[in-house]
Amino acid sequence: MALLKILQFPDPKLRLRAKEVKIFDRSLRNTCENMLETMYDAKGIGLAAIQVNILKRIVVMDLSENKNEPMFFVNPEIIKLSDDTKEYGEGCLSVPGIYEKVTRPNSLSAKYFDIDGCEHKLEADGLLSVCLQHEIDHLNGRVFVDHLSRLKQEKINRKLQKERKRLLAEA
Ligand code: GNR
Ligand code: NI
Image (cartoon, rainbow, N blue to C red; front, side, top):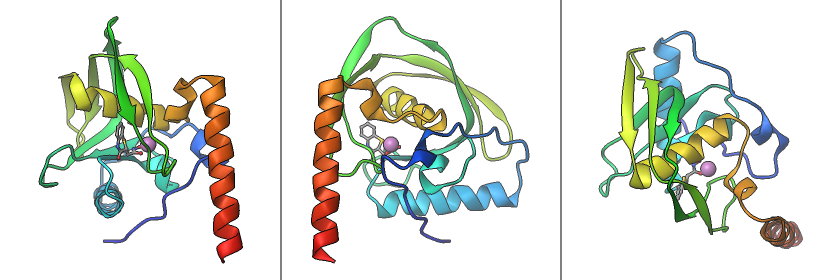
């Protein structure tokens, strides 16, 4: 197992579209394990492969209290989003220190493959719905700040720039 480096917004690599997984083998299992370890280490509840510079449609997640219920979604696809929406305070491991309310469809149905290549269907609301939408956005080159107003985005960019300057001065 290995810890992977998490790309930081606004890295242009976070804007690419991840490619479908076609082969379900040991290497996929290995990638999933490393992603899970990286996610737990960073205290996140989800991680998309693109965030660790792997351009594949893979998502790992663990929404459990005791961090002992890992979930893997390969080639996840949203089938339907509800018309009703809900606001939820989101953060992202690729945008550290930024937390903002995002409005998204409240519930969804989706399909995905598990690690062994078996297809599953899923209905979700609550945190699973929020997190799946957040992660599938990543696979399509989107970041949660894209959902915010221009004004908020500019504020976030200024804050991140300031923070980077501070870190550079420190070094
Ligand atoms: O750790 C995370 N927490 C979180 C909180 C609210 C909505 C979405 C998330 S996902 C995020 C981890 C992450 O960046 N996944 O891409
Ligand atoms: Ni994220």
